[in-house]
Length: 357
Ligand code: NAD
Ligand code: IPM
Ligand code: MN
Image 1 (cartoon, helix red, strand yellow):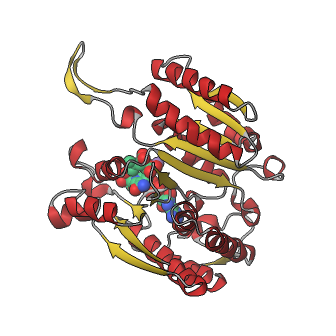
Image 2: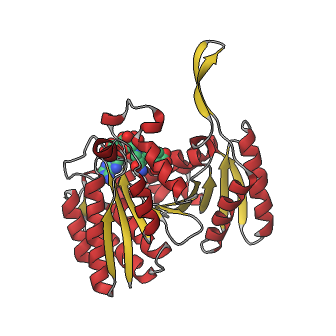
Image 3: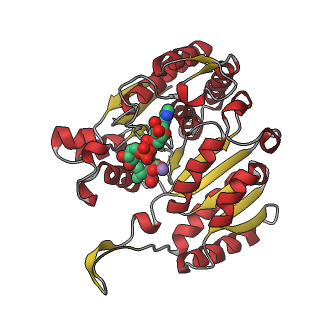
């Protein structure tokens, strides 16, 4: 089979991690007899520098014409003083919206070889954990009305959160359907003790739960959830939450697996086309030093094969290769942890994974 993949490398470590994932996809293509065609497009700070805007029309068009999209990361200190609607991050929100990608799946799973890199105690993680965070991606406070105005104390800024029943319902259904294929537990995370949007969220989730009697449903307040995630992560299976809570909790969940450099994601909508993106950012502190962990992006490419192309065996092959390389003790700097191992650069780690495919 042939597949057209749009590459949005973006800024900072974006190029190194996307190049790593491309190398792995090429190897998988050779092994299983598929052809992947890659076409790069500008997004974020590099697009601002090259053409004066973070999300050029050509990028949106190229993504819409592709079978799927692989993203590195956007942003960096160079563009941090730009107004909100001209920032690199605005392009990421824009492309998610333009492609209709309302569901962001972020799997936070214990890698047995990385126990020594997790900040959690052995007794907490000895039984492992396997959480699927289902984050709403095109609504909430990220997309609400905002601005600067004169308030009671002079100049003030505001951002607003709005969620419609329709938006909550569609992300809720993704969560319950996902749970049906896993261990049939859904925890919905909100702040219903304070926020009106969360009360609507909770009411809508409970209505869906009534349609899925096989799924064990619970809701939890977000502050408690942040605590429970480090107290006993294995209590969670599928977690469904709003755009902002999902952003924050997934970075927390990533670190208990060993590093933010391990956590992949799939951004999905109603078509087969998705965007696959590591959950971390452009890591300006290590950009250009060949130090980044490419695994999150490589595992995101595996998710692309599974969710957009229906290539489950090929996706398994990448995931097994990652496990094998970790099992052999190869480590980028972020996952060396206390147990040690063989330190590798970004490109060396990618080469090891390519060889293990
Ligand atoms: P970050 O995720 O870029 O980095 C946080 C820390 O994690 C840094 O110490 C970094 O070195 C480390 N890290 C991240 N990815 C790593 C990897 N693959 N391997 C090893 N270490 C890794 O978050 P930040 O520093 O808060 O943000 C930096 C920039 O990235 C900001 O401009 C932000 O807006 C942007 N950002 C973009 C995305 C995205 O494009 N999806 C996501 C998050 C942040
Ligand atoms: C992420 C990032 C983005 C988000 C930013 C860069 C807009 O943090 O993908 O997690 O908040 O969605
Ligand atoms: Mn984030």
